[in-house]
Image (cartoon, rainbow, N blue to C red):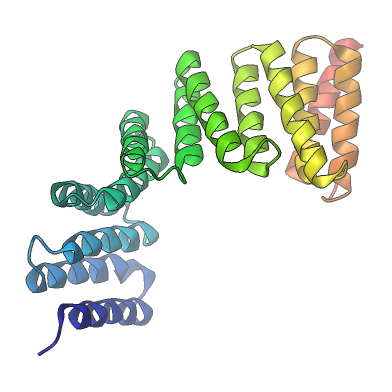
Length: 270
């Protein structure tokens, strides 16, 4: 007689075999068969039922069947919460949020990002806080909600500093994103401060020549350009281009964008 563990291992092997032998278009059917078989084998109170739903969602998502993936994830979340599997529920809530974000359902994505943050907090796991809070801030930025956007980015930044230290790539990324958000809302002084902070961290980590340093230089140039500080903007645009050219071809999108901004600056100043 096979044990539950053996049945689960066999079921997973069958899924992988079916995926390897069929086209990408048939992977959703393989996921459906996997889920149905798990439902027949395992009781509703078995943790394997949650696992099967989550795996089915992952397979459907990778196959491009987004709505089917969402249905699997939502059922997995409901069952995980019912069974008190909080770490699993947190992970699945985050997957739902990311998928809804991808599908353009910002309101639903925001709810699930917030729920995932709460669930991760409930199990004292803050490993995903930076990503989730930053994604939530990005949603609020696109919706034009300045205060909420700023609050979530500041939360992400606080967590990044507490968990990574002041000088860390993740801290620089959050500073960069918050600086860009400030610029989008016309808060030029705060935008300059955050981009300068990101630049300082990146120069300490990588030295003066690095693509991330070039990004910060370009962002500062935009801030100075938008606030009519022509000489500073021109200087930072040139510095960004020269730094990018050490790593990228002249027709790289980043360089073309900076050149276009510089040309716009020169045309306005003429």
